[in-house]
Structures are given as structure tokens and as C-alpha cells.
Length: 261
Image (cartoon, rainbow, N blue to C red; front, side, top):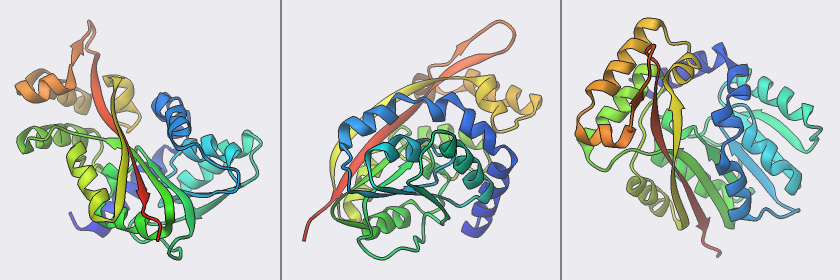
């Protein structure tokens, strides 16, 4: 699918249920948010860009610690939902801007910190996205990504990505942790922390967040049941009476620092 059409699809999908992503426990309450604060140790004078802010949870988490946050997203409806959510928290140092993650409209070295959480698997060109973050962060600044990861073997990666894309047609591709580290290094970022982790997902709730039909949920369940050995070991599916199931999504925190000049 051409990149422009992929981006239009993502915008259409996220415009349908922006409030769902504000309320989603997976996005709003992940332990990785507190972990990012612990690892990065944000400073009072910093300016931060949050890319693909979604419900605004990363921007909201960092805003009390730093001077200024730009919460950005490709989808205008998501930005409006994030703005309403963040303002409810009484935070006044966040501004909102519609931004394409692969073409950041900012000067070189504009930010002390750039974050992007649970979103890059929607981007058509991950290397370009990472290069843009490396350009826009200052020397000595930090780029922090949290996203889904897949097994190293291509065949297994294809199966996991097909499962994700069945639920979410705007899913472009999730990469292995090794590939992510390579993207950072190729962009001139020194990887200084990598932390994989798992989240358990309930199939029905996960699928309904994207508005999946009962037929599509049945097909997703069938993919869990029929998964080949390596994807099955990765997904760790458990099946319940009544048709629901749970499974694991693998994600990782990747932190890179731009070398000081």
C-alpha cells in the first residue's frame, strides 16, 4: 500500500474512536510510563516533543517535570481528545500540533527529548521516522520509543504482523528488537537502554477498540488457535469458555542519545 494511502487509513481509523484511546487501560495505565520517567529523569528546563500522542498519555506523564511539551499527532480528532484529557489534569505547559512523524516541521536540535509510544507500527517508513527524531533532538538529547516487537525469524514476524493487521488495517509493520536497535544506530543515535516486556491482552476488548465485527473476532481467535509453533509460543494464547481469549503482546522500551558535538 502506498505511504500516503496508509496514512489516510490511519487517520480514518483513529478518527472513529479517539475517546477510546484516551480511556484505554493499555494506553493510559501502562507501567512503561512510570518506567520512562525513572529511566530518563526529565529536567525542569526541557522541551519535549511527543509524536503520535494518541490519547496524550505520554505528554501528560512528562508535563509536570519539564518546561514545555508539544503533543503531536497526524489525526486532528486524536489531538482534540488528547487536549481535552490533558486540560482536565490542570496542565498548562502542553501545546498541540498536527505533525507527520516522518516529516517533522522543526529545526535541527529543537528538543531535549522526543518520545513516541505504542505508535510506530503504524508508520510506513520507520527508518525515516527515526532519522527525523535524530535530526530534531539536540546533541546530548534523548529519543525514547516504546513499541510492539516481533520475533527475529521472518516467517514468524509475518504471522504476528498478519494477526495485528487483521484487527487493525492501519498496522504497517512491527519489527524485531534487533532491527529497532539498528534503526537507532543508523540514524546516529547511541542506544543506551533496551527493555523488552509483555502485556496480556483480552481478545474481545482488544478487538473492539478497533471496532472489529464478530466475524473478524472469530477470525482473530482462529489465528490464535492455528498459530504455528513459534508464533504460538510468542502469543501464549489462553482460551476461555464463551469464546474469549487472552494473549501476549511484546513491546520494548528503546532509549537512544544523540552524541554531543
